[in-house]
Length: 46
Image 1 (spheres, helix red, strand yellow):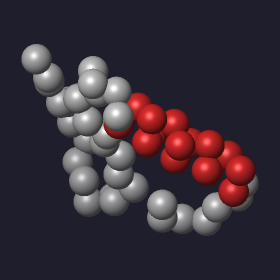
Image 2 (spheres, one colour; image 1 turned 30 degrees about the vertical axis):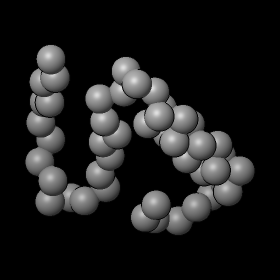
Image 3 (cartoon, rainbow, N blue to C red; image 1 turned 60 degrees about the vertical axis):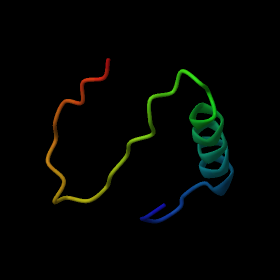
Image 4 (cartoon, helix red, strand yellow; image 1 turned 135 degrees about the vertical axis):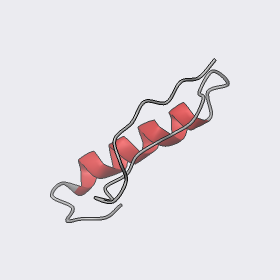
């Protein structure tokens, strides 16, 4: 996770939540970016 970590406990809780969501069969993907070169857009899933 890029950037400074202000609260390690909250960071770990968030990463665990992401891991759990990624294992849900209804999860279509995990998407995040802090890269300023990535353009904002809309992802359509069916």
